[in-house]
Length: 449
Image (cartoon, rainbow, N blue to C red; front, side, top):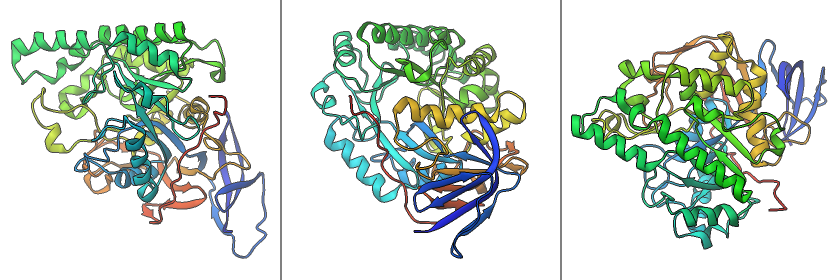
């Protein structure tokens, strides 16, 4: 097997930073120590002096658009961008074309990824109002979870039948991840502004349409149902300060039945940015007020919010440049999510240890992912080296997304991903990809489910 020795790194793991070495043998980490000597002339040695070594980030919410929407993105193109951004594992959502709402269609996505993904992968099974029988066939040991759209769905994936919703919550022990926006509230707000503006609604009104009320109504209802049924609930992309009061930091994450995620764009942007960014920061849920952004940061640092993700959801530039009602929501983020968080660290908003907790350790714990998310002996060598003193600016020339644009274009980051290992394979190094597909299907420690 091939040996790689990473020397003199600042190893960030489980809340501490230690200087040391990590030895990789094949796919796995086999030794971690203050100093490891090379025992073979064939060992590849990487001097990481002055750099952070972190576990590969696990992004628990992406939309890589394949199958059916490959003019926007593919699993290959976006997983390549992900590893350049230090994300070595992703969980992709079911709202592709066709939607992953049967076991057969779900497995087709896994087959595509097996042949094309640079990063490790899993996919969510999509719940609908009428596919409970299929949903219950989902294997908890090799599928990340169940995704329910309680608002803002595509196709027929809006689960709005209350009896069906309760039956799903009552019938599965698998993690249920939810998009929470009350559809009736959103439609009412949208109709109000359509009467005034027609299709060309000012983008600044997006957070008024997809309002705090719409988010809170839906998330509080989902949490109430989870408490009633005992379901394992994970609430995606919180966007309001008000919602954070629904979550607790009083118990360890391993014992939480209800967990929460925040996305990078809700921590970085606020309503003032619509003036310059326009529909390029149109997301569902909407980017909201400065007060909301500050409330999300507070809840994140207090551990009421457990995970930071990207909700990477690319569209073409031409699609995004349309008038409000036609411009789709979502944007590309996997290449820039970790650098943006490292920028926040530089600004004193968050420690590097806390970033690793929220982007690496906690997703592994919440989803019970086998042997990933930590720097430990016997774990897969999903590892990332970071130079925190290497400024670079996001430009069209270095954007890797198939859609070719980023909401961070023109932003200068001061930390750079220099090396990314996926299952022990050096997949990315200083802007150069080693074009061998090494991503593996994620597996889960859920034998009791």
